[in-house]
Amino acid sequence: MESKAEKNQENLLFFAWAISVVATLGSLYFSEIKQFEPCELCWYQRILMYPLTILLGIASVKKNYGIALYSAIFSGIGLCLSFYHYLIQKVPFFTSGAPACGRVPCTGEYINWLGFITIPFLALIAFILIFTISLLLLRMIKGVDRK
Image (tube, rainbow, N blue to C red; front, side, top):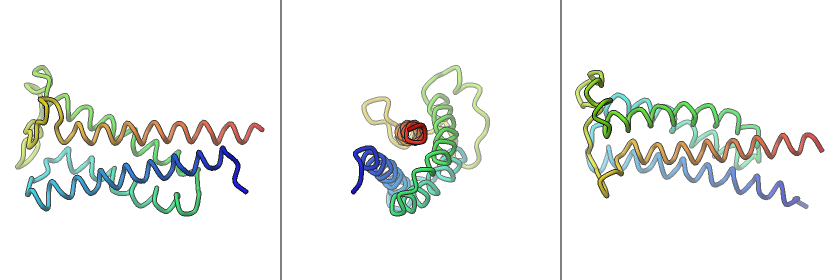
């Protein structure tokens, strides 16, 4: 019989996986269906998000909560990258100093819902959620090891 702590860990791991799936499918929707060509920073964010879908999916099935360390690293880097990308889109100080980013400028905004929701913002939210869940899982694992 599973303890309440194990059930909570299982739910958190599944939630992190679900977030990564939604983020992955969202990025594929924008590029493959809406035909938005990703900029260079978007590609880096994808490089960090796509493996999370696979790693968290396998970990969720196997109930391997130790994956939280790796998902924290991937999502932490992705969080920083998405935050920087969002800054160069929305903050003039960063926009003016933004480096050239390839065929598609990283300052471009394919979407701008409600005046602040852009594709890097959506990635930022996903990375923040996965990072937070990963930290919670690590904390729970540490608490279980102490007992």
